[in-house]
Image (cartoon, rainbow, N blue to C red; front, side, top):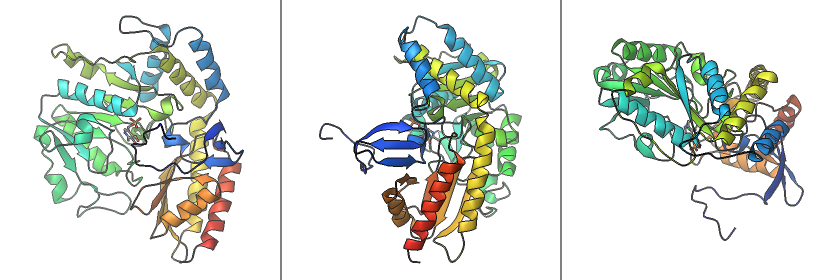
Length: 390
Ligand SMILES: Cc1ncc(COP(=O)(O)O)c(C=O)c1O
């Protein structure tokens, strides 16, 4: 470990992890851990998935990386599938590596075609590690705090009937970057009323919606994409994380309505691993696997099971005060014991996600989590609750 920089601010808590199977991780001493975070929300179809491994091996025995000037038939196939599952029937797709990169690419493309100075986003949205979106500066952004307005409803936030909403300068806004469920924030899902109001206003003056589906995509919320819980078709979608099941591939899907505008505006974005066949092959297999194994249904069912079992553990006498979630994107809300419960769960071998200073534990397991694994976690959680005093 002496040779590695850990610049993400997280402390390494475990022995070296050397093997895995679906939700389970195995350390160098043979201990088993249960990963209920899918790495960093990436292993949508489980760690060490044999079908994914097979296509990786087959492809790397042919070609992994091509270059700017070559195509590969798999790119067309996977792009076609992404267009179909996003519902953007007339459009195109570009493959990249990380979520940050896909969001940044989408942002630059949006800026290139937008004829208005501002972009709209919610204050609890996270867009990536760098670039335009990460900066969210006031010159180019209108940041709307939907969680602290006068019409805010519990768990929904703003419903679009307040002064703050009325102040959104729609005439200056070219596009709305919509993360349909604040994953890096507090796992809150914006109200359908608010989103309809924004989309209607935006589209009336020629604006468009760019959905950031890095976390909420690829079945995480029980539909292919988080925006599909709302009444809208985006002009652009960024997908990452679960698309590669742990392999770094992301994609931007853009409708012709956006791309047509580029004919008048030069747009160049070049990096080494653009439209690489290996990433596209993996993404293709992830999509097929989610479809073939009916993992969207499984996600909804097991998500609902977890949500209702967790809700039954919550209450005034319990350290757990509330739960919320959509599909397999769940948040456990505590008053002041999230850290101690998080540590005790780790001692029992269960990995959730905890952010500093926030009394929330997040749960984003692979869509392939079984009821047996869910029950093992619930049993461990009940044991932990008995150990902590209120
Ligand atoms: C909503 C959202 N967008 C973008 C990103 C950036 O993705 P990546 O870390 O793969 O660059 C993340 C990462 O957590 C995210 O949650």
